[in-house]
Image (cartoon, rainbow, N blue to C red; front, side, top):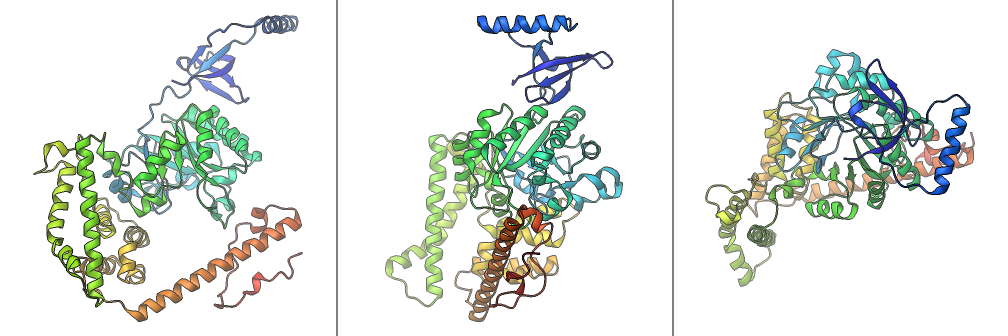
Length: 544
């Protein structure tokens, strides 16, 4: 257990609690069992004389005694849920069906999408609508409710509505979107002028709620400021800190390349509460490597999980005994051979002649598929599995590709109604099956679907191409249109980059921050004339 140095202010007889001051100057009210007298240590002569002088001065001022030094453990009343493998909060992304799918494949802890504390705290109809962030079921545990806001009492009122159905409440201190800038929440609460407010929010929630309070932050401009923020959140009562190891950015520029995981390591070293590392995770190997390099207590993933909800499936394998490891190695070898066969079939479909050795490999396809099926069954500990390869914890059969993952997600949607909006369904399936949909030139067809039946038909078409190698023929016209679309997207992205550079120059001339100049607006509206320089990129009238 982690105990923290603090000083007694007074004992509150009315509720039998203790008011203490932490080393950073913040104040908390704790229950008696959360506080103990600090252990005495040997003091030098100088320290002893200094203490005696301080005591003499206090006596002359009419103070009867020196406030005793204490140690407190403010989180002792809360047992934290498992938090090694965590799904991050995602607007339109971490909804119930997607959470339940990921839980099947190793995710221990899930966050809800962002919930607006204002309307959620006062409007029963708003709370009842799952589109507003909170939808759950008895199997959806452990769960963290992820709130945004900037008023301690409003956030508390909102959290109380769900406290009996979640395992923790999280304060959003990391959102860099324009709406967060406009409504002053998320990462825009991390400036020094708002630090007292943030600490009061965390303290109020941690003292009043029956569940632990978590915080999710981004990095500040320099490491020392980030470390100070982390210490203050911990001292205010946060029980866990998730660190998205990227800088805050601006309302229109939210990412700045790879996450700076070395800063997570520094944060972990100074805190006693658990720290989650968020960033630079796409595969299970990344999960293992990041845990080892940062020393974090867990990994939180957003982008990686959108592409692969089975990202944490490696956690289901448990300790890898030599025989279990052999099963995994054999499966990887078989899958590699199958990929080689598929490539040869594509080559054959393109009209190229295969050599004798290549034809022999193609002839082994059916045997390889049967061998893979047996190995997958063995890995999951299913019927027919060899006992030495069975897992201590039976894992579900791993989906073979992105199309299978998309189908599993749609099954989860049907199992946990009401269904999310069509845009959410399309978004998830597109992320999971992007490789296959792109390969068969169906990506644009899929994202253009205007109902679920049409989307399922496109998936079925892709599955048909996948299951019958050689049946897909490249559409040259569509290929050309795709190239033109990508070129236009690249052009628009470059225009936006130039616009932000222009605003940065303007901010420097005016002596203001880029956020102030950009305000809550995006790039100016109007259609772009492809290939020409938009008028709003010109430098004229910048001095206004």
